[in-house]
Image (tube, rainbow over all chains, first blue to last red; front, top):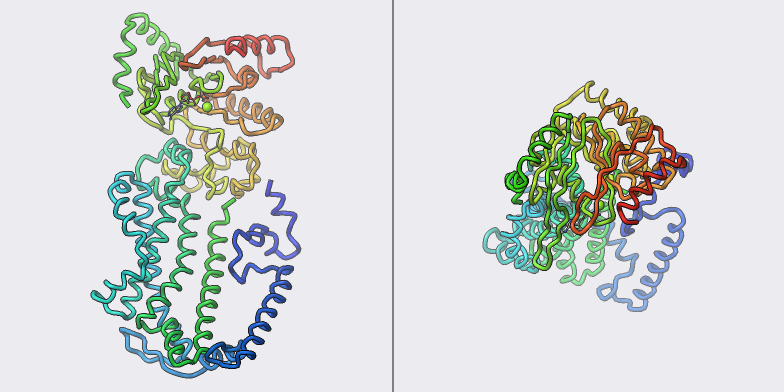
Length: 296
Length: 275
Ligand SMILES: Nc1ncnc2c1ncn2[C@@H]1O[C@H](COP(=O)(O)OP(=O)(O)O)[C@@H](O)[C@H]1O
Ligand SMILES: [Mg+2]
């Protein structure tokens, strides 16, 4: 039935000929999802918000209590352009940077490794426990007990094992990514239709590895992708929390600036986190839509 | 799971008559022998005798339908023959060999299609061939041949979500036939398509059956469908699931629903079911 939709609802450009890429609006937390009509409303709402904020800031008239949007934008530009150097850890090479890009790079240095390693391990355990009833039985008490502990509480071990630096922060980010991905992968594997496994068996699949590779993993991919996307967002929250303890980066700047009563700079770095999230989430959605084009 | 080995003991208690029948059946070229099959589902709260003393044969190249009211054990029997479940007693034999699990000698088609949604039509049909190690042009040719057989050449690169119910089921049939099984097993395959599409699919299935000379075992609760399609109709009854009678449909094909003889068969099967 949707074969026709694909052919007829295009509005001229070849891009528009794939309606499901355009109209897939399951959730709309990303800037990339704004289309033409809602854009106008979005612009009105945003301007009203900025105007209200500006008016309130002018009424308060103390930058450290409530910086105005103009002051925040100014601080943002200053941070974005103020030259500094960024020393790449381990390698020790100093690179020219600006304050903002240097802080962002610092955050990424624990965000990315934590996200990648935590996600991979979480997916692996989730698939393993979702597939093997025995492994599930053996480890469920442990996972049930450990799951409610907030990632930040593990800062204890980050401190005594690694210290609060990139390593410690990555450790905490990794724990956050681990649980999110573990549960999504587990649910994805558990939810694979029995029919699909039976069809595969009748078509000659007779070992676990082939079944996992050719049926379980592809069928669980949407759920696994949701886990990755959720952790892309959640891990930024954890990054900020971890940096409150002293790891360098954007989150540290938010606190640091606030302690100097440079609230405009704090808010500028808050905006940085939001922008980075929107960009990475938008990019991931793009990839997801392409890879999971088969989804109904 | 007592299953297959216990089956012999259960089957042999009625001794020589059985043995004679068994030999006889094999000599007639029986493809499938359902030999005194029983299946009991037991849980803490209840015990369901889904099948009891089920016994019939399907000959090589024959089209046999299983009909009966809902809950009479059709799906259970389908799954036992497919090797997805072991009988509690008795056994199923294919070409004289007891069934112990699923295999590529039996292609399966389900009401819910069971297509791999992440694979295109072509890739769905390719699945079994990949497992058999068929590669390159041999694989491509085989897929093309199957798509042609079910009339889906133009939709080779579509994903299942883009297909209608009837088209999905044709993919299911093409995928099952690609690995050249000896038997096609179908459990209410046309149960979720509209009547008009179903008529078309009946014609196609009969054409495919005569072109490929497969043995077909087709489960349905639709009596007209059974009379339309099959050489023989195995009529089942419920509580416990058992064979009431096997009706041979002695009508030329193509069959016309409006013919009196057709109606007589339908009435007869309906009476057996108790509708
Ligand atoms: N996995 C199962 N566990 C317990 N009872 C089952 C199971 N599968 C089927 N049954 C029971 O066995 C009987 C036959 O079911 P089924 O084979 O699905 O019948 P049909 O396909 O003819 O409608 C029903 O009473 C059903 O409730
Ligand atoms: Mg059924």
